[in-house]
Amino acid sequence: MTLPEVKAAARTAAYARRKVAFAARATSDSGLLREVLRDHAETVLAGYMPMRTEIDCLPAMAAHRGVVGVPVIPGPAMPLLFHRWSPEARMVPGAFGALIPEGGEAVDPDVLIVPLLAFDRHGFRLGYGGGFYDRTLEGLRARKSILAIGFAYESQEMDEVPIEPTDQPLDLIVTEREVFAPGLRR
Image (tube, rainbow, N blue to C red; front, side):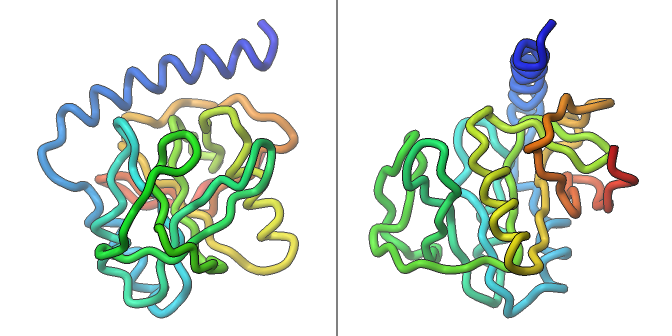
């Protein structure tokens, strides 16, 4: 199989595992994420608006004591932008159906909570295939220090995420039961 075929098969399996994990949860699983973010209070945080069966980071975002943003997709094959968000923000549909703040005040994150389909202990994530977070992390890392936190259900772990040279690693991974810094990079 080619790498795109391997990634497509891995995405299908990861969607199924995440769907099961999502269905089994009655409440938010962001307690450990909130604990991790306490060490980064007053920094600019960017999270995401959970879609479908993504683990919900909104309670952790709402509890953050600094500025919080959410991603905005400016166009195909472009890095993400981030707009200021609060629990009271008026949200409107953006690209791909993700909600974005109506106001559009730009923020520059220091900490980025990254959604994913699967992750491995090396710190790699399997995303949705658009490359938005990889381009974004590459650009942010080229100009500043940023903490990239993968947030997922523990059942989204796989032995080894198929990777390409453009795939950006995560600095921390937080699940509903564990926080870990990835091991050595491949």
